[in-house]
Image 1 (cartoon, helix red, strand yellow):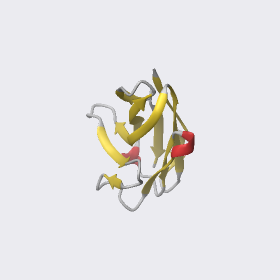
Image 2 (cartoon, one colour):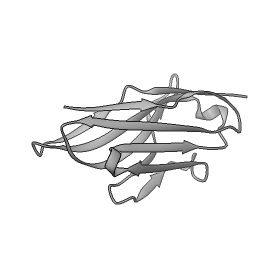
Image 3 (cartoon, helix red, strand yellow):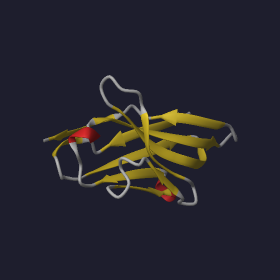
Image 4 (cartoon, one colour):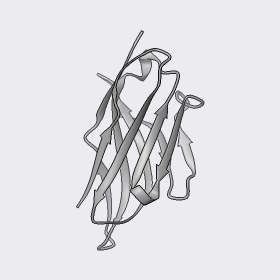
Length: 120
């Protein structure tokens, strides 16, 4: 009923920037919290940043001051601006969202992931 599609990943040199986007579609009434998570090879998935429907944000300590999460509620889209990228940021980045459907069900959804690779 709800699909999340990420885009914007790629290969970048250390110190560079990337902007990830995640668009939600389907039977959406509104979207509550949205967030970005990442999973590096051999590691567990970890929280990167979250944002509530009112715009309150939360960041992992490892990305504070470098990454910025934002959202466009009219477009059901969440963004992650990543600056000063480091090789340690290399991972598959996943979008997550808590959606209230038109049928008033609450669904937690994940995107398919987008690869971010930072070369040294």
